[in-house]
Amino acid sequence: MAVTKSLYTGAEITWCRLCGNFGLMSAFAWAVEELSDTIPLEKFVILSGIGCHGKIVDYIDLNSFYSIHGRAPATATGIKLANPELYPVCFVGDGDIYAEGVSHLIFSAKRNSDITVIVHDNRSYSLTTGQFTPTSPSIFKGKSTPEGPPEDPMNPIVLMLEAGATFVARGYAGYTDHLKELIKQAILHRGFSFIDVLQPCVVFFNTYEFYNQHVYKLEDVGHDPTDYDQAYRRAKEWDYNREDVKIPIGVFYKTEKPTYEERI
Image 1 (cartoon, one colour):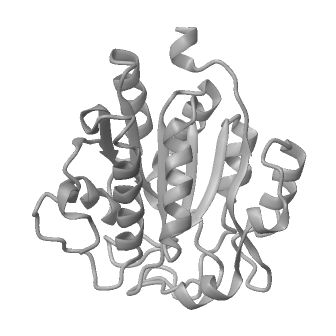
Image 2 (cartoon, one colour):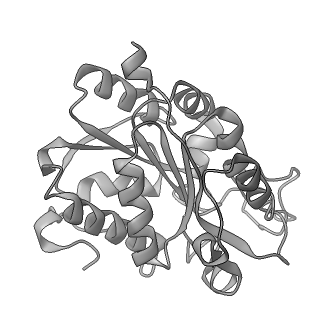
């Protein structure tokens, strides 16, 4: 079972076998349980957008809210404004948040809303059976683009750094222990926290082998997450279209500044 029994709702899990969502869900559930000594479970609110990722709110037994396509961060900001004691955590997809919801993502980062956004980035619209998304590389052969996407992928880490996010990280669903620690840091961070999670889709874009060969942990190379310029250089190491580079995971950048809710 991907979720510890105390947090599992009992709903039938309909993700495909070996889907990267299982690793991401396990990492989050373990993070919440480890934080439960200091943050009561009833203080968490999990939100989702539209896509395969959205099913996670059915499987984890916490306060939850289904948002509409791309609007989870805006909904989470409203929840945090209404009750500052809550910890809103958004689960969104790369097609969901980097396409229709990108303006909400950017403004949540710009405002430094005290919320956490976790992106299930499988680089495919998998719920609708395999179209390309804003992070799909040119080699992605989707149903609507059998020769590959006619555009280059975006780099979400660079986007969030430019937008003013105060906690920017990348995780990998295949390294659940590492991802769990990133999620804990993100939840405890005061301000806007963002984690782009490399989450393979075994049916439409199976990237497990590629990520296993190419990811490395920023903490293993002495990266300083308080150095914005260094974070930007690390973020540019991989532009989501190259297959011949190492891919950094971990905390790229973190800083402190007043939150949107404090300013309001």
